[in-house]
Image (cartoon, rainbow, N blue to C red; front, side, top):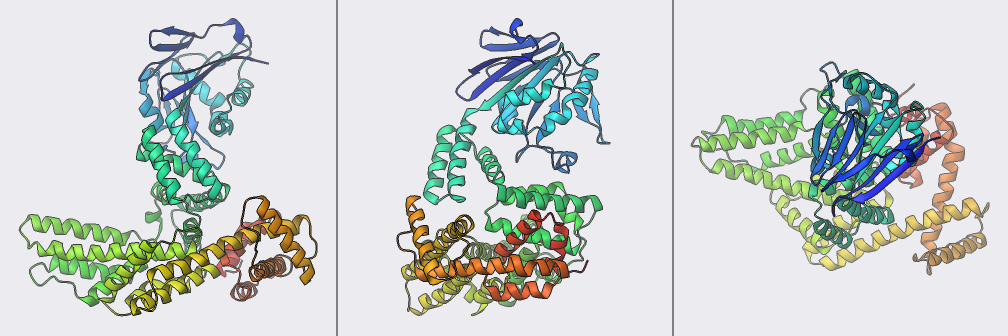
Length: 608
């Protein structure tokens, strides 16, 4: 048994602290004093002073926090799935070999700005101890690492902010005469922003534009800078269970590739699928970009230069760089080739294309600086303008096709109309070929996404012909989006009803009774349920029946026989979205404790 004395206070309007002294006889000791505007915590040989601007420390101990976006994470920690927290011991550095080097130089000062910038944006811990370790300071630090390192780096109580439970874990490892001193710092402004974003995000899994604007105003009042806002938002979204699963699977695949020093075709296909899924789930790209950078994705892909990159180099480097003394204009054929090359690069997540473009821009600047005609920059700018139009159009169409709850505005439709007109100047059918053909061929395009894309494609043409207005198309697309939301709500609630209350739902009478009860339940929850369209309800019931047939009749045979043809036949003819079916398969494998590697191979059409 141990005792705890806890001191709580506010250093200013930004920093809040909790300081705890834990020992077998904690009530009999004094562990702090106040000197002017400084609060000092101490034990024999150790001292930690909270000042108005930061923390000064000497003695043993260190700092720890939960890992989040923006916190440097060694590869050794990244590769261990159970490591949750960053631990830094005073006077300790990494050698080139990757081993730690301990020194006696443990004193120092850290500003609060540094603490919450380099560490966790919300909560950081400092600690020191007496007993259980002895010798010079570097020997004490090494002893602390061996004694407490595993616990401090893996405890889930750190992220949950549960000091009592954390101290219970720690004190079980200490000697009888030891004491442990723990100081928790909380950034109150970041915490308030985090709570506001958390409540909005977990309520909707998407934040409407008006709410996001209100959130931005709150961040401005709280003086939370843009980088810390991004860190907090990414951290909240990552902690959503569905998002965490996608990111962790991506990370684990990439770590395995990093260890082997290459990415094969199967693994690259998995990574691409996860990236596609991340777009659907609105997972921030920064999470994947950080992993790609850390694990050197670009260096692991062993591919010869693709044909579209050769075309890009030929047009940009040939015309801009090597032929600057002749007519360097880009004709329509060249521009179309560049646009299709950009699309190929986007599909392959190939950063080399953008690197070529950056190199070209730099070379243009250098040539103009050395006296080349300014028209060179104008030509390059016209290419960049088309690429910006490509990015804008591709993003809007893909969001409409693959994401739910996307605002559909008249401004978006007008933007697409403007881009369509610009691309038509290069070739009449370029817009449809460049953007819609690849979306229609995407096997992950769902039923509602396909309807929205088809409505958009036909609607843009009708507006140009004068047969439809922008407002009409906006209403039509919004009606499909509303139906999609209603369908998803119904699917969740009908499945829940069937799972918990119904064993039969085949006859019309049974379905009508079920529809009435679901309508009542939705109304009680404040959701639209008074008038459930019979056709939409029947679609939901048929969906559930198909799902049951797949899980109970087809999937066991597909897994046992590796019957890829049967799986693809069901996906092609059932009308169920591939994203949804793949999630059912994953849950089936987890529930039955099957090896997910077999599922990956079936999906990719590979034999064992």
